Structures are given as structure tokens and as C-alpha cells.
View (cartoon, rainbow, N blue to C red):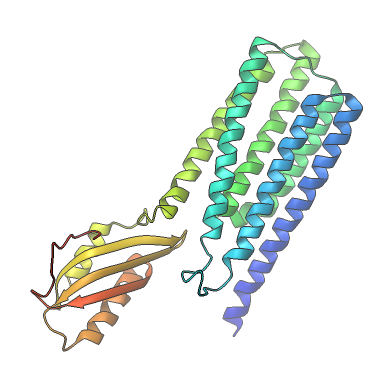
Length: 300
């Protein structure tokens, strides 16, 4: 009984962390808008809108976490766990858009440097960095095991880098009037965000495209299945990821005979789980010479 209680407790704690992160980000958005109006800085108001997008990315991540826990039903027979994968795709896509937006802004400011409105912009950027740090601490542990939360975390890190850029570049501009520092740093940050977003979105697309686990070789799986003394051949094998951490397999398995069919099935399933962490496997057993049509090793 205690073994079942502990995971649910962790999930509840994770939800509270995400809710707290959403709250502080919405609060920061309000503060930035007020400061932008007081200082007359459109740039600060624009940054507030950008921070609002970070808060919304956390809302999407939170909603996906909740939906993913729903059990399978007649409409979603595989369950709802891919909701987190879809949320990660949405958040990484918006990150890519943000990266290109920042790059465009950086180029524009290289051509037409803009004066910083005053120290208030730098101070509020410092507050934003503090909030980004709090958010990072809240969701960092969750981001280790979830591509959904990892996408939200990268969103947060992108905003933190933006705040650091405002503080450094803004201070240098105010002290030494080095106006080119701001667009140069912005271009560097946009490249960094784009790099992380592309790296992060690749495994997300792999899951959605029913790709095999990156850490598992389909050829090795097939070889190990055929190593069983009762197995003659394996074909029409499909190996895919149901979620970020759940690999599934189905295959046609040709046996020497059906006398020990149940024992063979249990043995193959145990081997797949122990050696490849494949917890869900389905086999269609055949006898030699009974398969009709061309037998592809992979796919059908």
C-alpha cells in the first residue's frame, strides 16, 4: 500500500510547484506592465507580454499533466499520456517563434539603435530574473523526467536569459552609451534559444511519429527474440513509444510448435522488459509455412 501512495504524493507536490510558478509569472507580468506604463517604456510592456507567454506555457504544461493521468476509455483506448507530448510540441514551437522574433528585433536594433528608457527598466529586469530563478527552482526537478515540463523549463530559461541581457546591456548602455551591446546580446540569446528548442523538439516529434525508442535498437530486439530456442522467425515487427518513457512492441512470431506457446510468450515478454524496458508487447504466433504474402522484418 505505501508503494502506491508515494507516487501520488509526488504528483500532487509537482502540481503545486507548477501552480506556484504560474502565479509568480502572472504577478511579474502585472508588475512589468505597470512599470512600463510609469516609465513610458514600450520595450518593457513588450517584455511583459513575452513573460505572459511563459506563464501560459506553464498553464499548458500543467493542464497536460492533469489530462495525462486520465485512464484509458472507449474514446482514447491508449489513454491520455500523450497529452504531455502534445503540450511539449506546442511549447517548443512557440519557443522557435520567439527565437526568430528576437533575431528580427536584434537585427532591427542593429540598424536602428534604441535608447534605454532609464534605470527602472534595468531594475524591473532584475526582478524578472529573480522570478525566473524561482520558477526554475520550482520546475527543475519535474523537467528531468518529462519533455512537457522540460519545454516549459526552457521557456523559463529563455526569459531568464532575456532578463540577464537587459541588465547587462542596459547597464553598459546607461554607463557608457554602448548601444550595440543590446542587439548583439539579443542575437546571441535568440540563437541559444533556437538551438535548445530544436534539440528539444526532435524527441517530441519522434514520439508523435511513432518512432522507436532512441536508446533501443530494433535490430537488437529482433535478434534477441529469434535467439529463443522455440522461435523460428520474427517478422512484421513494430516498435514504438506510447509516451516519453513507455515503449511498446507487436510482432508476428513463428514457432516450432504450439505445445509450449504460453511458456514462450511469458519468456519473451519477460526478456523484453528486462533487457529493453519494453513493458507492453503483443505477439501473433504462427507455425512455419502458414504466413501468406511477403513477410517484412520491420513493419507491414
